[in-house]
Image (cartoon, rainbow, N blue to C red; front, top):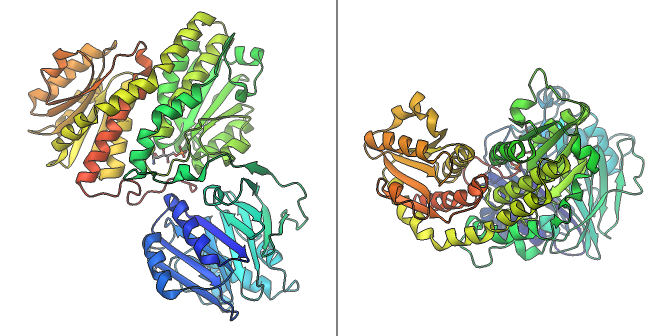
Length: 616
Ligand code: AGP
């Protein structure tokens, strides 16, 4: 949530800052702004409520000139998304400016103290206190030391932050700080760069420094970067990562929007993930960092995540119990963190699933499980993310940058990653022999082509999307693992079309949601050829009897279902019913996109949302 970029060097700062903000806009897009240090020695700020594209247009007129600057794209937490709350924020002297990602929990108390001491505030944000604290510290005994001033300010903060700070009296310098919110810095012959994640830097360098919590850095225009710890001692070996993403992976590449592109990338993402995983004795998953006997002794698996990733956990739970016969449970991280009691055994494996690797609740849950002595395994998409760094083992799903706020390719790749994990556990504890593992691996390898087949049938989704034209609500139903597909399908349509959708286990429908149904009410039923099929068909009939118009996701050849419903989204047959969610959801992603586009929505940047939820 919120994206930060900074640059100091020999080039003009604005082009990188604006391009960087566009790359980070998935993190929040309520407002955007920048501050550049002008050659006349004053700060030149441009900031507005609205998208980065609006800031780009304003900058064409305002023309901020200067070779050092910081910039921000905001997802509002404190203060409405308006011009005055847009970052960066200045101090009273207007010589210092800061951008911030995170939440300053004690800002009210600090603001009161600062106001009592004569500071004047111009925004309702928590961030502005940082600018005034740096102002006070800058006047202190270590005047001229920007990073010391920022360190002093941070010592008074409670909460989470990634901060970039510029001062007109420290030309050519940017001080940055990290505590809880991600921040990377990089150096080239052209200068020094800071960003919330590696994406804005991917076209500039392949090597970045990843600041750890409580670290600070001073960026200088000659490209020097010095990292400090919270006591002010220099950190000689800061953590670094090599970016292996092709910068073009984060461009549209001819697609109408990132959602379309990322849906289309699913088969290749799964193929990449599966490549070379079948070993002579089970699945190769060295990333788990557990020896065979340790794997064999795992007696409980605890899966934790938020949002779409929590749907991965729900299905993974079934895979683990079915294939590895290990008791598994899942939890929403936001709920888990406040459970009064967490029951773990000495051999409990904790799996966190997080596309971004930065979801605050998921990270907090992982830390809690670690403190309880669990081995924490992260399934994530983002290289060098906090989850990847803090976990004991990490499996990168390698789906490539996911820019659209609605998760698509990361969801299916994470499902496949969890299937691999289930097979590893099954082989290690002897519940599956090598033939069984090879058969399941073969079943997984069929998924990319099955998804490609769904793409060829996307006209079915387009036709079915017409059913949502006159409706303000809908019901998504399924059973077993596809009860979760119903939840995920409903979440997709809610987040990008703003149309209410209720995802529900089909068998539970008559205990309440059936009351929603009236003439013409859209119901999406996931009813593949599986053990739950006939039961779900009965539920479809109950809906039709009450006037619902049903869209069914059904397996090729199921004329019985086809004869009853308005539209069928056909999926090819799969040998394993537990893998159907990976294919069925693709129809629902495409359907949601068509519905949203018909309603004129920005499918990549739905209102009120941010891709990376770095606050609790
Ligand atoms: C997905 O479409 C959502 N935007 C959201 O639910 C997301 O899955 C959730 O915020 C968790 O994110 P993570 O996977 O990066 O932890």
